[in-house]
Amino acid sequence: MDDEEVANSPVQNFGEVRGGDIKYMDLNGDGQITDLDKAPLGFPTTPEINYGFGFSFGYRNFDFSTFFQGSARSSFWIDTKATAPFARYIYEGETFTDETILQNQLLKAYADSHWSEENRDVFAIWPRLSATSNQNNQQVSSWFMRDGTFLRLKQVEIGYSLPQAMVSRLHLANVRVYLNATNLLSWSRFKLWDVEMAGNGLGYPIQRVINTGLHIAF
Image (cartoon, rainbow, N blue to C red; front, top):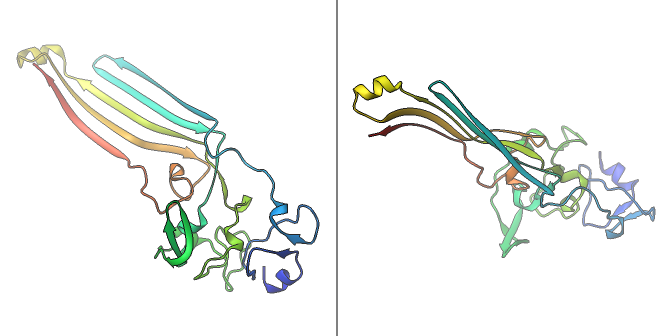
């Protein structure tokens, strides 16, 4: 909540700690927070279950098909370094170090829910904002762990074929108009950004595509 609570809590050995920073549980009861207080939690980052299903049917001149895709029993962690606003990092290979500026913008999710002196919300998504690397708030913990389970309407299409009598008068074999969409809907407990972007809300999201077309067979 504030610096007074910091002073009266177990010492957290992950750099400077101030009011608004994440508070960790002293699991082994030795009066300080270290790597010895880490414990297993969540599911693997690779889903234990991947699945898909679909169906199609026709009625008179109409046809409809759809395909759903999903995964279950997986967890991911919000990438505090990749999404940290204003902080200084350099990207080397597949890791960040504390040397240069990412020039990240402030994600709307963090802007709407972060701790500040004016709003000491201990349940805010993002802890105290900092212009430099905050090692205490970047520990892999339950605070930034999220459920990776999702179900997505991956593909859906509806079509209509003109009556054969009409098509024959046009000297054609078949005429069909259709409308389809990709990534039209998704269901997930994670609401901050597309769940398949996992921990980095600044990545390029999966695109929703809607097409319409006309198929003519001679």
